[in-house]
Image (cartoon, rainbow, N blue to C red):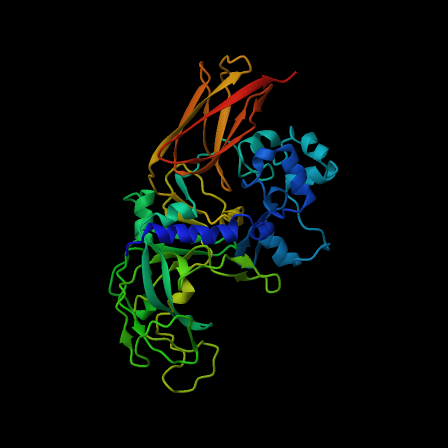
Length: 463
């Protein structure tokens, strides 16, 4: 279905009210009022809104049972949401060094020449490269997988699709809804998916992930349902007037007769539900579980079309609507609050991203990252480094990082002080560094579009 320009401008206006001026959403992921992170950002202001502006700078993640959690969620799952904690929350090597140095702004500077995590790079070198100084597996020089970063504005400009369908859950309430978003097949085409790609894994920052084949053989049986990107998905059926089903939107179809829904169904990355933006996901302070489903939810329609049934926990009534294990319970295979999509297999020689850390920053800003077996279009970013007299300065390392993600590339200024790099579309930060120099500005944040981007830095020798 086509969409006029008015719709996406309207959605952007609504989105701004949610994520633009408000700090409520961001407070969970970065503890904005925490003095420790404020000390860090006072010394390294360029790190604001990057993956370093997060609990994971000083706190490790961990595993509880079979599930892995990032630092924020691991702390809350283990100790709850109230301070003080007994015993004290765990610290990574950088957090230990900061604590032992006194937990002040001066402490940040005192430990910057240490190699806290023992990976051969000083804390300062890691911070300038947007890698974690407390994680020995994250260090400058790693080759990241190809990656593209999309904000809501970019996603709204992609071809959109709307579909009315049943989400049949196993333990919770079934419901009918109209979701609007981008077909996943169109999203992967835009990202430049490789022919060798076989599957995708979608990630939520609370530690949940779900893997889907790009194409699965059909037809399928109840014992081996595989939701795949390409489908096909059969038309669904509408059964109205059931007291155990959610009907937040009335499509006007006949009730109780298995009406065949005319909408053609696709695997969808949705951003609207029944005309409203999806409620952004966050951790419930009481249950410590994920509330909300946005800003993006991956929706797999039923592969075996059928009607709703009661939850598996409900007492059977023998009226034909009791829980049926052979039905297609597609709701349990959807993915709420999607922050990243990994296209697999990862190209040889590249490293994965740690989605247990930093994902909440993407959610806070309604961004989506697609990476792995893709070959996205790239655009030039270029610039020059000169001293205060205008003479070129060579051998300056320019690190380019996707905001909220980390370093994805770099270049070194040449004889004429010129540097350049081709990168996929996204929101980046450029950070210059060279021993014995300071720079003005310390960093530049920019959105890279097909127009490219030009920048300049002035280098000053340290007295």
